Length: 63
Image (spheres, rainbow, N blue to C red):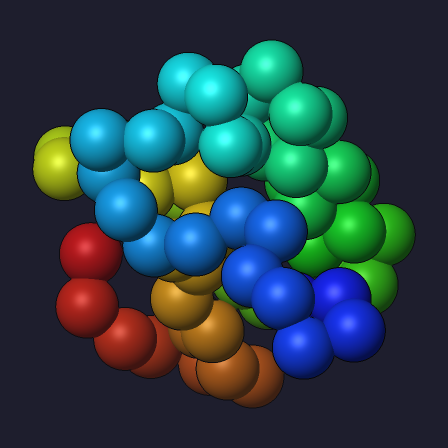
């Protein structure tokens, strides 16, 4: 969201336009990696470029 407006929502039908073409898929992936935190993702099936899972200090969590 930016200024109260959704810029990249969780609509799987709009991933190509709202996420990929707008650059949000890449920006989020870079931010997650740069955080240094133990995240896994994004979810591949169904494809959700916003869906990362925190694995915690012990690598737990669902696959």
